[in-house]
Length: 183
Image 1 (tube, rainbow, N blue to C red):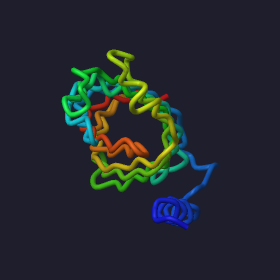
Image 2 (image 1 turned 45 degrees about the vertical axis):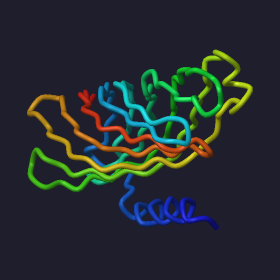
Image 3 (image 1 turned 30 degrees about the horizontal axis):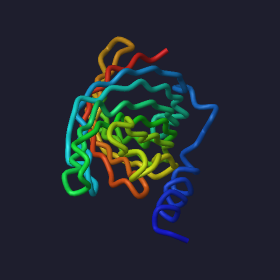
Image 4 (image 1 turned 180 degrees about the vertical axis):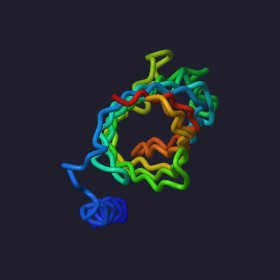
């Protein structure tokens, strides 16, 4: 068993006792995020603005399940060593993660998350780049840490750093701010 699967399984097992689907504070929430993503790989070393949306369900005060979409912007690829000028990638990701919450005060929570995302890193086909690297699509691990400020209303503000691993394509780090609405 590889380390990623072991970590993910351990997180789920550790969270299982905290799962009380009949908890009184259970609720759905929606969020929108903006941030900065930096991607590093053999041919990519670029950053751009990122954005995304998410929907989540809080089982109790300590555990939630979130689904999210992230667009990592428009990344420039340096291909001088392949005699191809340059091209652009537009990586996108759909993910599902377990979010653990540790209340610090009545309004501030620390966050930790782990999950899997399916990504699409198809390059624009300029000068034959797609022929060189092919289409990059797969499912891989992503994880992060952050903090959340809960306003007195149904709104929360989240600051978070996440790492998205892209199999055979490097990885991307994203720092983001999210505005959440709790139903």
